Image 1: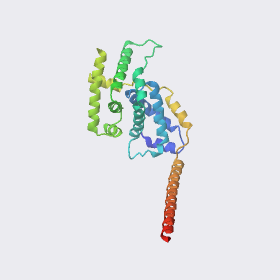
Image 2: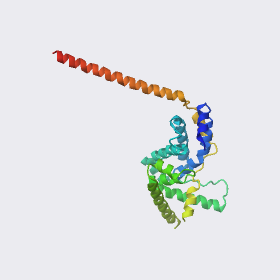
Image 3: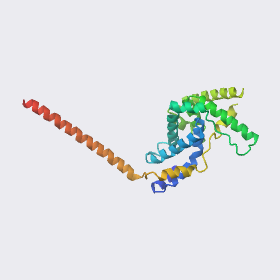
Image 4: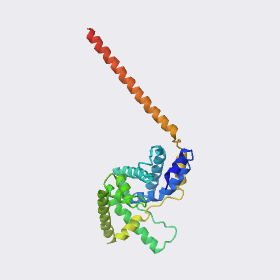
Length: 181
Length: 74
């Protein structure tokens, strides 16, 4: 997404131009927040807060310094870390096993039910990971976000990032196998 | 297993509600406009802070000099 024409439109007073930014990034942002282990309602709150902070600090964004996506996901990552590292909140989420609910209004095809169950298990497994590993995995699986950008957001080298992601995936596989037994 | 996990991680664990952009924009519409004027205002605030700081240091220096002069005069 070419952010500069949008920034120019916003600077010219067209606030609605920012809606294009929200529409473009909402999907990867919710994907990231889901991989961070947040439930739907907390993810919605944090996603809104991310876009609001981006809006309020838009004047500070320097296109030459970092990609807009790097800047935006840095905000999201910091908000998610802050939220999840509050011990009481974390305990509450773990205790409630805040997994995505299966919609029950309409009958679902078996393959959808299987997928929903696998997502539930992944969500539970993600909650078992340390925050640093969860965050590394969460950002790595955002389409279009380069590894260098993820390493920059995480404040580590690419090598260290790869190690964290590898370790996290290893642990996820173990946990998912345990759930299958 | 590896591919399965990759696919699972790539899949959307959570989805944005259909009206999410409208919700965000409603909240943004209630915020003040952030344009070059607000940046100028921010710069003005910094200048005022620095100016105030310099005046404060000058006052303190004057006070110290006064005490020193009084003590030196005996």
